[in-house]
Length: 333
Image (cartoon, rainbow, N blue to C red; front, side, top):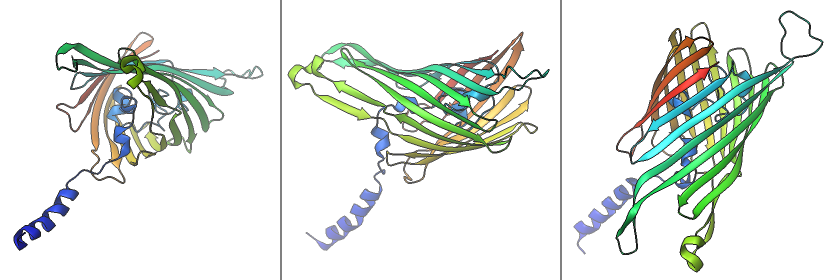
């Protein structure tokens, strides 16, 4: 081997190694559809919503926020995705106020408040080309992955609220192969002032998929278990009603070798017209992890006792032929 070849190998190997993207195990962990976000408002703000207590709320981001919901909130959303994927949202949130029987004031203040939030996230892939072991087409296949959630919370004082959410997962993978599981989120929210909130949330406690491929492969089938990543979120937000400005940030720690920051801003231009922007998954320990910038807009109009709103959000999706477009309808009544 000549000296030139040896020098070339010495120089090229470090370059090749450094050119390989750094791997984080969270990228291959199950339940990715449940970490996309919920609806155009949350996604448009970079999913940094765990400490937000104004506007339409949902327990997806923090089960403790629902006692702050004004009136009843119904939300529905649809996401335009590439590669024959689909992602849909549906939720209803309501606050319940409890008053003291001894309070006879003309304007009574609730002794305590509770909140409930129920919803569905539906995801799947269609038009999968099915083939047998000889390579012949057997028809189109599809998958369906779903999360059904129920969040309950209580506001113990004007400052502190805590909540828990139960999440039932159902994944229809292929013919007789499916998986179900029950996971939990717990969250707390503390109002430092009327403008500043702090939040702490742990998501996907006990969430996992259990698989049994014996119905398809018989004796060659195996039983396996895939655990969801456990996320710990520390959030803070600032809301200035006079300026119509909301700013929120979030630190997310995971057990999947990747921790990241989320941030978002919402500005109320004038009556019921909002502009939003955000950034999701700004990694703290993996410079190769793709950042997801986002932007959004919403407009609402009153119709009798209903406030009807239309939302839109855009989020960049790296390694895809198209980015994410999310549209939504929300009713406040």
